[in-house]
Image (cartoon, rainbow, N blue to C red; front, side, top):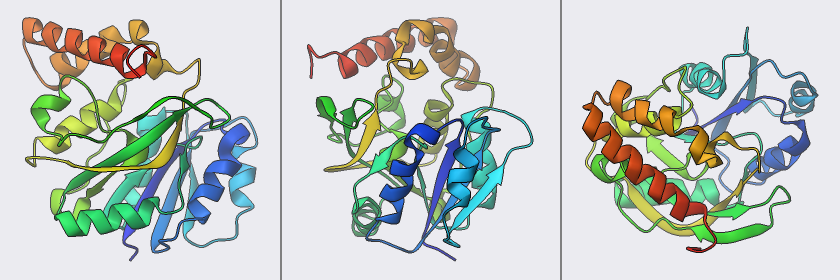
Length: 250
């Protein structure tokens, strides 16, 4: 049984997939399994993954296109590692990411931890200041902004159990982290930059004005808050999201 399970959804990611694969294969920590679920890609993604001869990599193909949350859930069902971490098929880890994160989790007795990550263009050239892991994360402060990015976070499934993604929401990662933080007091920060996030110009998560309603539903439907309370947290999230990516503040 591996110590770490890496969860990756893949959909038409052939353009960047080889760099992502190489970043995993270059990890100094080697006791991992990588569960990739292809979400019915129409490009060469599956063929690229199938070329890798490594028994730690376990590829599945979804029966239908169900979105990233659904693909992650299919992989999570099969995950056997104690520590769960996530890497999208176009993102990138520094070689010591897993080693540093597992060591930090053990040293700090952490149930959830997160690190800095670089915010880059599609060629992995940094565009604005690195996102900083500079605060302990709690359920209350995560309501106002999602500091936990999938590519730079890890949780201990032995202690908190597996947490699945709600399907049908465009904010499924935020809901998942909030549900986890209902179970534990804090997530701990590791202030080292060990991952690179590609900021695509077409990314849904960066078009804040297009997903305000989806974010409101995080609070109203999933957290079961009142309308007024949901509007309050949506406004805070929108302001923090603007500050997170604006070059004025970075």
